Amino acid sequence: MEQGITVIQALKRGKLMLIIMPLLIFLLTLISGAILISETGANGILALPLIAFCIILAWLTWSLAVTHWRIWAFTNVRNAHELQAKAVSQKLIWPRGSFFERTEIRTRAQRLKLLELEQRLEQPDIFYDDPSIPSETIIRFSKRDKMIAFCIGSFLIAIGIYGILKDQFAMAAIFLAGDYLAIKSYRQMRNREPQLTLNEQGMQVKDGPFMEWQLLSRIDVSQTHFRYRIANLSDHALELAEFDKDASAIEKHVRIYIGRYEQSQM
Image (cartoon, rainbow, N blue to C red; front, side, top):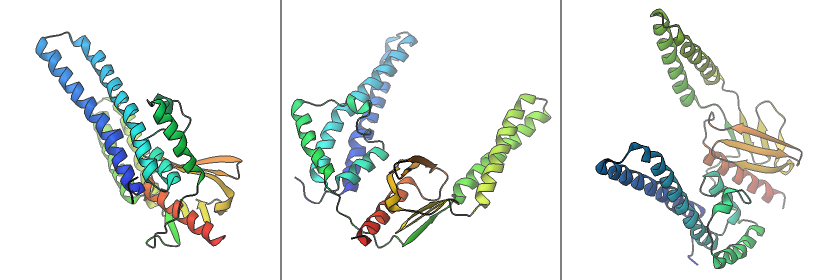
């Protein structure tokens, strides 16, 4: 066992093994195959089988590498729950029990080792506080992203108007799309009301009621959505692409606030 391996270090190694390495194999195989087809004068119809072969080879690489990473990471990282949640949210692995998880290639010895390591998920994580996180965090629409969207919308409006003036009336669709995007992004850019409030007692979404952490039976922060379940009754989701904090920052804040809340209840 390697001492002192953090969740961040394990995730960095996971990105190298499970994203970068399969991607490199895909690209190198695709380029090599394209050069071979070009040099031999083979028919271009081989392009589709080549792409399919590259995808299968990249997926096979991931299927083999993910088991080695799982065993190494869950053996050396103390906080198994945090590691599992972040690995899923960062698209390194698939959720437990999913169809794609079954495509992982494991030997009998590796299956037994993973079953042994799964017992670590029954142990609570060790909570490490972060003093840099304040007692309350207010998340709003991202002014920068909305400004970019507004500029894109304005550009599409200009293109649409130019096309209409040239009697290319099909460009009206581009005008309408740009108009919608510009108006929506302008309104959100001007809206500085809190969209999500997180603190040491709970959370509040927009104008909804304040909810203590103990009322939330499930919280999942992925790259695109913030999902939560209220008292095992109803599921809700927020899109994160529009906020001024990214998914990893929101996930960290949620984890820290829940940890502080649980400590205050002891």
